[in-house]
Image (tube, rainbow, N blue to C red; front, side):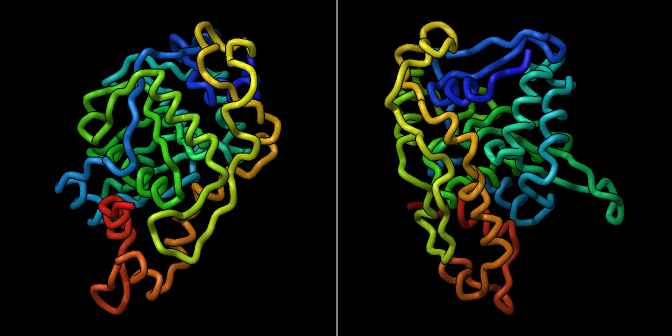
Length: 297
């Protein structure tokens, strides 16, 4: 059964998300875990080896270039996971949210040979709502590809003025990159602060780029999620009442702010973010990402 998108957004704004028992399971259920994994945007753990990989530009990294392929690859079984929780209804819902500018992907591309064709070798996807980004799933077909995708996502969120990166459940992989575990109550409090933020802004980094609000009508006021029929125990979380407004809004401005910087920033702007040119005023995308990850607000 297709998932109602307004209900889906209300669920995420209340700290609840959908899952299925298997890829081919037609049933979708709502999850409100007791603890949540989040990555503090100022606390991403950039190891020396990962920094070296990012600066080397071993992967070409893009955003929202192949969302459909990313979510379908995340939904496939792999050597480290025999089954996934992304069924056809969840996939369809997120494809629609992507078309509306609310769901986003980050892709890593590489070729097997020096002159061979590029392939999608890693990536992730998630939902943008207010100043929160709810990470859903990631995959890797080449060493470090998912780590690089996540690093680029964190840099993108920092530059776009986001406040929260939700990773749902803690794993050793996420913990190694700086993820922390918090109670559901603490998570909902963080989420509500991110939802109540008046608009997106490019904070902490000096730049001529300014972004408009991505979602209007987002706030803690309104009926509880339980009243909307989104799972048991949801009544404690403040619900979001701006579903229709969000469905008609452009939710991509803040997420795309980094793209504008990568494409349009001139030499003077690079100096403004601390990326002084090593030769002729040029700087690689990887160096920019490493710089953004190590800057503090």
